[in-house]
Amino acid sequence: MSVKFTFEDDTLICRLQGEIDHHTALPIRLETDDRIESCRPAKTVMDFSGVTFMDSSGIGLVMGRYRLLSEMGGELEITGLSSNAYKVMRLAGIDRIASVKKGGIKNGDK
Amino acid sequence: MVTNEFKMSVDSRSVNESFARATVAAFAASLDPTLEEINDIKTAVSEAVTNCIVHGYKNCVGKIYITVKIRDKNTLIIKIRDKGCGISDIKKAREPLFTTLGGDRAGLGFSVMESFTDKMTVRSKVGAGTTVTLYKTVNGREK
Ligand SMILES: Nc1ncnc2c1ncn2[C@@H]1O[C@H](COP(=O)(O)OP(=O)(O)OP(=O)(O)O)[C@@H](O)[C@H]1O
Ligand SMILES: [Mg+2]
Image (cartoon, rainbow over all chains, first blue to last red; front, side):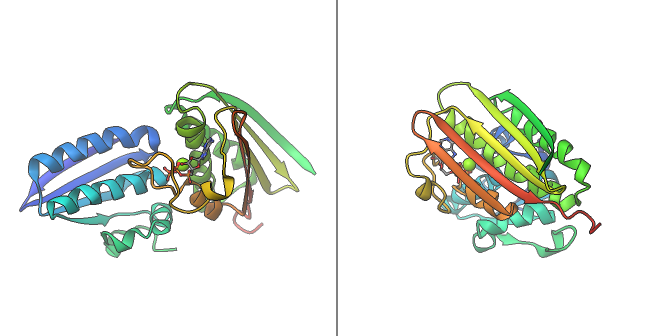
């Protein structure tokens, strides 16, 4: 599991790669919060297109970043969810707190 | 009728979460599941195993016992058990968004298990441990 960051035009892009579970979520969270705090981006994009597995730890990851960003007045966008990851996220009503880019969803929304 | 069975126990270390779900998925592979069914199984198992680690054995490392049975050729019965702290109010614990940990826990583990399987039962006793049983019928690519 890893995260790669790019920061351009006041937008922080976090490209997540690998499997997200309780074990891997902690280092991702620490690294991402570190970046958000140092860049203070207007917009943050969490890109899940490299994610091969995700359980409810992924929900916690998104909700936690959403809380941090809303304190700083930043917005959050989620892209690249696989149909499995989308199924998990939908249970949490993630579409209500972050903008979920449908175009980024692989394999359609089943 | 049970036609095939598999048992294992593993230490409640978070590094074993991926090992446990991958192993159950590998055993289920003989039923020729679709990719979506495999993902459903892995996701539900990951939730149950994580709960043993973060809740059941909150302050210690114990054993997680996993049994998988195949019944009537295509139904998986997956039992995941810990001998940890137990749950005092199961009904409450199963409610969406209920969590005793907070932080980055969403309180959606049981909801995920329920919606990714056909049926889930929870048995628990405070001080003795918790057993979650997941039922999943694998239709595969419609044989
Ligand atoms: N094996 C277990 N032993 C003891 N308590 C448990 C166990 N599994 C679940 N619980 C209790 O049930 C609650 C709800 O579990 P659930 O998996 O739905 O949410 P969570 O683990 O708190 O958060 P999430 O799974 O979304 O990260 C837990 O907060 C915990 O109090
Ligand atoms: Mg849980």
